[in-house]
Amino acid sequence: MSKSFLAFGLAAGAMVLTCLPAAAQTKVTNEGISANEIVIGTHQDLSGPIKGWGVPVSNGMKMALEEINTAGGINGRKIRLVVEDSGYDPKKAVLASQKLVERDKIFAMVGPMGSPTVLAAQDILFDAGVLQLFPLSSAEFTFKFDPSKPQERLKFSNLLPYVESTRAALKYMKETKNFTKPCIMYQDDEYGKNVLDGFNQQLEAMKVQPASITSYKRGVSDFSAQVAKMKSDGCDLVVLGTVIRETIGAMSEARKLGWDVTFLGATPTNVLEVPALGKEAVEGLYAASIFEIPYEDSAKGKVKEWLANYKKIFGIDANTQAIIGYNAMMTFAFYADKAGKDLTGQKMLDALESGDKFLDIFNSPPTTFSKTNHLANTITQVQQVKGGRWVLVKDNLMF
Image (cartoon, rainbow, N blue to C red; front, side):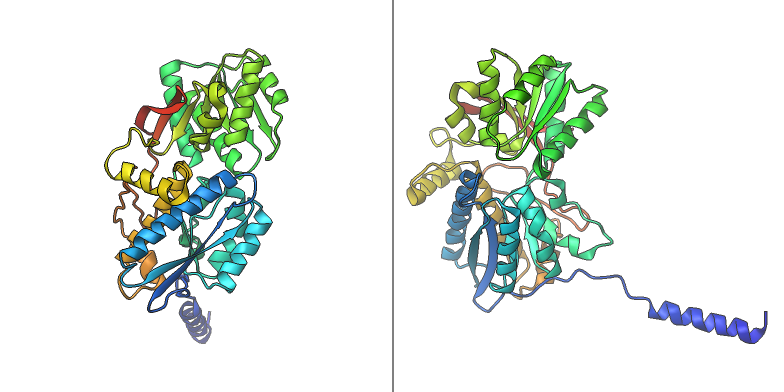
């Protein structure tokens, strides 16, 4: 090889190295921030199949908003919340997100509702550099991110993930009740498939074979075929990847057949509406849960005061979803305050990843994030319906 050719090769190599792009940075928007205001958005189901969740979530968010703004806001800025109705329809969630980003110029999306709706719309946010914070979904896509895709750093979750919580609760039930023929009925969507993943992973870890696996389409109301199949397959524990109506429907069908089997619900079954509406049909139901559900007649201190205030403002009792909506807003406010007076998107991202702990008034596990972990925690409880109320059975569970 000639010296001139070698010199050319070295020079070309050096040129390539100097032309390589620097490590891609996460683009974070500064839209929605003015001297006096921070504009944030959310999409909720206010008219569709889970409006019983979306309405109280938005109520809880509004209650927190009033509390924050009355106290002076965030470093002198008031929060303005724009709420859009998705109807629990992914297409509507996409349109709502486009409107919030392009017309309302939101700084962050806080507490959006539902796994399929959040999944369908999240790329609109990431492309615009808008943070997706604390969605009302425990699916893994809400916090797992690929480091090679910088915009995925914009998502954070403070809810217990379906996979981990299902595994922890199933492990507890196996160890304490010694079930040998577990089965599952799950909703055929992103949520249900996460519960199924947790079910399958934990059974594999325990070297147990499922006795039956069955699913249903979101929105159906007849579960007779699924329940009959699980009964004929000899299941002694039924894991439910269901929501309110489906939980009650499946357990009512089992009672109708005279099938006395133990049911374990994923976290969305652990809401006040299940025992309130299901009554005797859901007695004995176990569920994975995030925090102990407060009742006004037994709550104490700040929680009792909060429940009374909610009822005074909205004319109804607060439920689990109202608490989650309230916490989503208070968590946003905590980290926005940490970001400082000179608030920017980058400073908000830095505050979220700082490791600072947010503690709510409901005695939930601490919320904390880092640069590599955007999931607040994986600590699980198991509760059971006894006498029409959720009662704590076991807390601080991990799989």
